[in-house]
Length: 512
Image 1 (cartoon, rainbow, N blue to C red):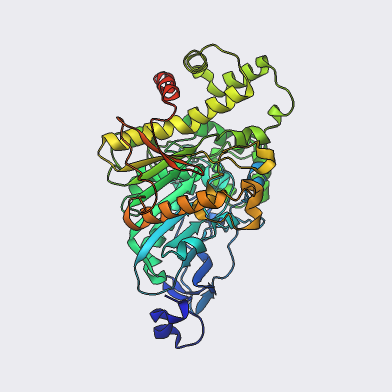
Image 2 (image 1 turned 180 degrees about the vertical axis):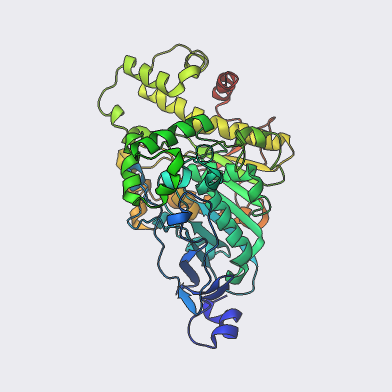
């Protein structure tokens, strides 16, 4: 249906030319833009600005407004430092502020149709990223009858500073605010998306990397129950990145750096944000993330999911063949030649107490190279956790489809191969954007892979099943056959790919 023929437009806009871009939310009217046959609203507030007395606290509802609010430009992303890898991945936002709790909607029309809804949670190690990258252009989903929502949430110190145990009663709820932002965004979707032509009873959440970890964690969180009905996890599964003990230690070190103590935490509300951002320079990069606090989220969300608490939610889960190539490509440690002794030190530091088990079971006491490291980290961080999650869902009667993305980028002379996050523009079908060529390369076969993945994700949003007429059958995953869709120029299902590696990593994870 053309936007100008939208019944919402005829009913409310009286032929004024707004083409179905006016929508009534619970907090007031918003007006977006019509871009071709799709309507888009950018920068809708889903929560109050988390500043001053709301800093480091759970999100609150936004204030209502009168008249029509223009929502035609993206809202600022959460404050964050620069990251070379995120710049390469086209998600290094220029506009940043503490006032960052905004979302964006793409839809065929703001009408009374009830279309499937997809809510994207961006990645970035919980310290970077935004919902406004050019890779997350929702028009291609909307052109196929899907309403797409992308969100910002607080990252880094503003999203994950743990104050729940060190402060007084006023700070008991200051835990995992970034995850609670995501819950608040889903509540907004639940209460408002019907005004944008979406169906609040057919919501799929999907995300990559930290976004996929967020999806997994949301599956385990009581506060998120009933807010979504399907889930897609791309290169990440449920995980508490930080223990309570470590989180408390980080908090005390930061307070010392800021010359504050637990008796005057309220002074945190009045410090300039730049002062706090400068103070976290004492920590390694990516140090903040979801804390297994046992209240907002379980201490071990992966084990909670293994018990079947989300087995009623159909899921797609998968990884990329060469995940770790992204990180080694941008890590100065790997510039130039690295001898075996240095590789061993890096591996021992990465695996710590598991190192001996990894060396014996996976590397079988062999030579240590950069390729060994990349393969080991890919399986340890991404591949095996995805298999464990898929097995758990299947054993508990859940519907789960497993994939692996094998298509190799031709960018940078092909050195990154099928690296972490490469699948994103294929899922979104944004590879036609010239900017994404620096990620994907210019090989014409990439359009075949994008068409394949994009159609699968759309089918899953519509029906809870990624099978599409005319494409190879994609059976559900189970511990017996382990059917895995391999996305490549010639996509197809493989039973238990890299079986021996899987069995070796099973031995390693038994030591955890």
